Length: 307
Image 1: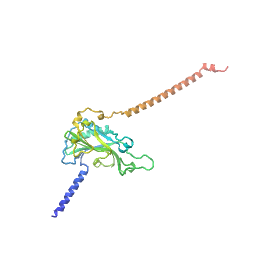
Image 2: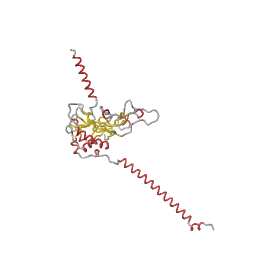
Image 3: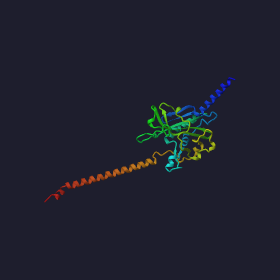
Image 4: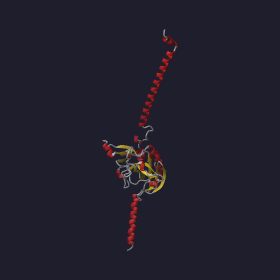
């Protein structure tokens, strides 16, 4: 009967290991690409019984449309209520044009190389100034709660702070399952750390935010969601999306935004004003020179000479 305690201990150990595996990040299999802009990698799907529709050949155009269609809506929470904007939603694209350009070929390669028990993970570093107090006197930092980041003065030596968006992607049937696990989240990392220890398990950065897809008609109904889907998972009919006309929301941002054009117009007006001032100064100088010439001419000297 002495083997029973050993059997019980073995079962408990196995259960603990299984639970810890479920709570940890998926196993990293292959890093497709990693740079200071981000990373794309293939990782093992935690649910060993699940089989994805990989490898999958997807056009770069369709993948770019998928990324451009991911939209994050912000209700602004308490700040919006105090400002009198309760219920007002601010929608922004999760990925900018440069980020779409960077991720598209890497995600296409990942889906083409992934096995049926793998998904494609990604991490994109996004530009932005880290929030911190600019007022004089006592500086209030948020290192305890880590929202939205830590003060630069609290940053540990040998570490860097980055704002990133992370997620994973896999295909099942005729659908793409795209999940965001982090959205514009500030993280403090060691300079020598790699993508393997930068991945986030629990969704972060979604306080008062919801994830949507444009066009809505290319999004699958809730019946397509699985036990692996979260509130930040989008199920997209990629075949239908590829045949749909490109909507304004899915087009790349123009090189010259309205703000840029407005700024150029204002600068042009300023330049014209300066040119007008210079012309007036030139006319004034010419008039003064003409008066001086008339006064210095012989005829003028005779008229002005005393009798």
